[in-house]
Length: 246
Image 1 (cartoon, rainbow, N blue to C red):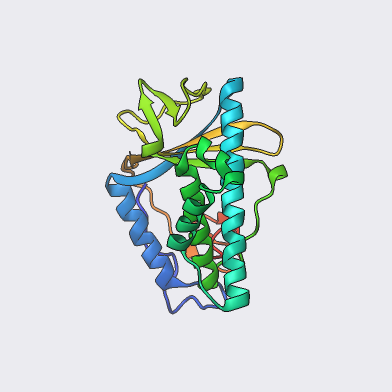
Image 2: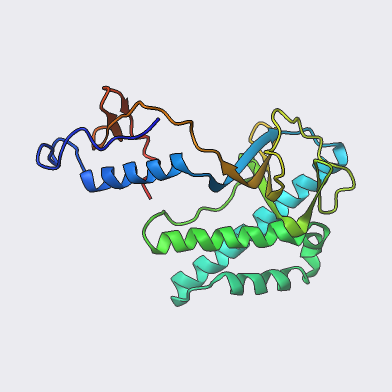
């Protein structure tokens, strides 16, 4: 399907009617580009999995440690700002983590992979960056009853024969493969999540290509509006789900 120019001109439209044609023209241009070429993108594939008792124990411990480190770092950064007007960054919290792992009462932090702990600090850094730019609220402390998550980068897992082996796990994760990964793709990041109902999910982030749509003689006009995200020339409207709000 090809995309035609907007079905109104700049003179025919107004901001009151919901027409932002500079954005609309840019959107049409970008859609046309995406439809004509292969596009490389990161895509996450999510699956259910059913860990062995040994894996579940380790994963729950890992998530608990990641939550503890995140909350300690958040508390330290909050205290530093409100008491001393000091901005504590990722490098500072990483140094704190090294110190915490040496404390006698926190030796259990050494029993899990260090990667999910460091990734938690990186996510906290991003949360603060979004807060300082005004695009997000102040970071919240993580709570156990909400479940948990642990993120593993390539140094903390092995992808072998289409199976996932996490750090410190002897067996592959028993994943229910509801669909296969794109051919030739390997995960770059693996996130394990435990929801509030006790169900385990794993998300595999892969770098893949999106194939172009087949050519068509049909065309359609797009109008970026206010009351609806997009209105098309055939009368369809796509509602604004609010996902673009900072």
